[in-house]
Length: 245
Image (cartoon, rainbow, N blue to C red; front, side, top):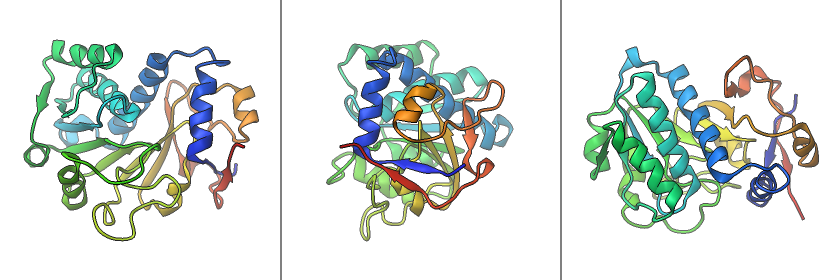
């Protein structure tokens, strides 16, 4: 099976279609995406490797941030001790509820990402997603720098933070040396995957055959109850790019 990639424009259109003709709500999609991220973390870093998982969540209504909050909740139920860095909380009701669910589970929110990295065993990068462009704004430059420098394994959600969705890591400066150990592409890989050198997973088990056909990509062969599949388990050819007009 050829591994095809979705442009940022196509990925946005696909999300909108899932919430219109697909009849999904945003919280359903976020729940399934976050669940797939949590399962990948459990797969590559089971609790006996270290239970302290630092989850960095992006600002405002940034969707990867919501996926990170969901993943943290599932990780807590799996027996981990997640720490959540969420410096710019959204006023959106959905995000407030996700944060409240974590607080009810006694999940600790931390204010200093750089210090928290020193006491963690694994990092989940849910800061910026496929819609990111432009300059990294405060307080996130220090987060990207810490992600570049840490020796801990990092799992990025949909896109390594600071990377351009089409062209990958910056050519120089902040983020140019960041290449996480694991990447979870949601729904389908994005063009930046051509620059990724770690283990690549696909998650987000919610696309119908009709929608996959319209956007011209194959649904991965998910096994049993797994919400993810490793891309090395399919025939990974040079990625084919799909765009929408």
